[in-house]
Structure formats: C-alpha cells, structure tokens
Length: 99
Image (tube, rainbow, N blue to C red; front, side, top):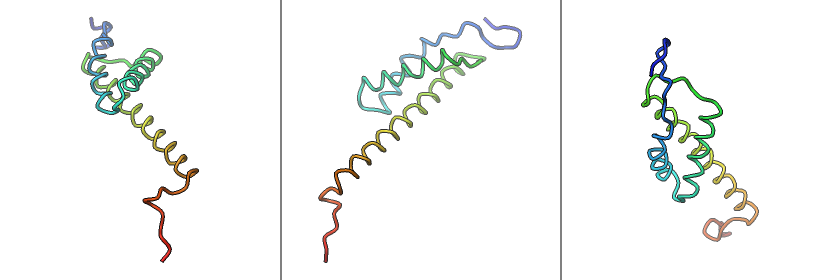
C-alpha cells in the first residue's frame, strides 16, 4: 500500500532475509558469522528504518548495510590478526636473514 508521499507502508523486510543470508555467506566463510551479520543488519533496519518507495529499494538498502557491516568485520579481524603478529614477532617466512 502506498501513502500520499509515494512511500510504501507494507514493506516486507523478512522477504529479503534469504538474499541477505546468501550474500553474507559470500562475504564470510563461516555460516554462523554470516547469520550474525544478517542479524546486525536487521537490527539496524528495525532501529533506524529508512523510508522506501519499493521492496527493491528496501533490499538494495539492506544489501548496502550488509556490505558495510561485512567490511567493518573484516577490517577488525585483519587489525586483530596484525596485532597478534606484532606481539609474536615476524613469522619465519618474513624474517630477514642478516647478510
């Protein structure tokens, strides 16, 4: 149903869940982590809904948020791994041999 502003009032966010889960699994290998990403996106959508004119616009917005969450998660993971590498010293393959 469309209101006078052209926005639809009967958006079905749950219809986007299979698409979100599939895309999340492309971003991360672990299915549990992928599901947590989808959960975070859906919580964000509920907390800060965006006015949309179509179901496709809702799905595009949700996919954009999913990508942002995935990038953040990957950046944090990479940072943590680099911190662990710094504490453990260079790996044998990256140590320079004195000439």
